[in-house]
Length: 166
Image (tube, rainbow, N blue to C red; front, side):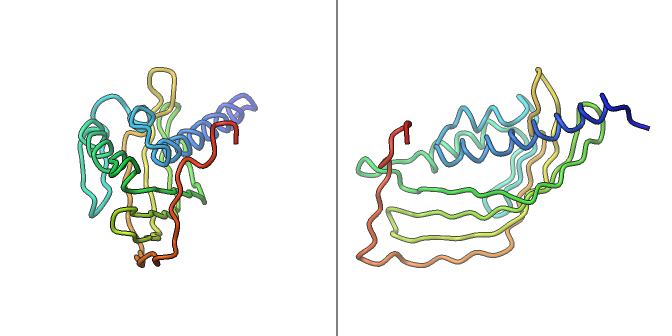
């Protein structure tokens, strides 16, 4: 039987894992390669984004992130992303490991091709507590469906319209 201290520690771990995953998505949307990389264990992370590629370490994915998500054309980002994750199911498997499942609604505006894509999928992750924090050791994304449509000539794309103060 778990003690109250054990239950509190488990709840704190689960909340830390939720914060980790939300920070990962914020880094993706904010075009923050350092924040993206910090979401994973330092070496040997398994990343499988289905059709987007599979990797056995975070560093190659960080380079792709820099070249694709952070790419600018005529001073504007080529793609604008919005990750909206929900429905977390997190299970601690030991004091320093856990597994998790999330639903994702992803929206991307391609400013060069003038298209909008909406996708739905599932993340299946594994987490490890290392160097004083929870990190992803495995991140697998399975797409469920996607729709891409052209943006009309009347669509205006604005980025950076709010500063950090809101």
